[in-house]
Length: 78
Image 1: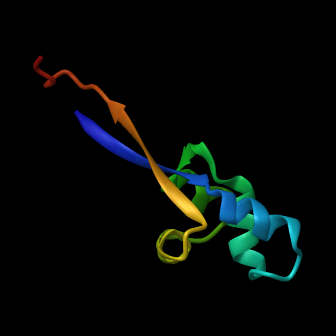
Image 2 (image 1 turned 60 degrees about the horizontal axis):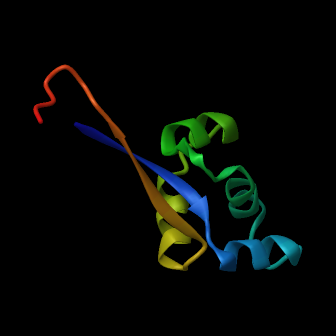
């Protein structure tokens, strides 16, 4: 089983999005796109830049939370 990390907004992120200027432009864009369904790679593609460091920073600050997605492959045993 492979785990793909996805990101979702926290209540703190929703508050920040309601107040323009509270966070930077790139962070705001990332928060807008983080819906719990998009992976870090997908978010990077959508924003045209690697968002790994920004996403980790937003997680540490409490704006994003990880949402793991389990992907089952041929080697999975139950």
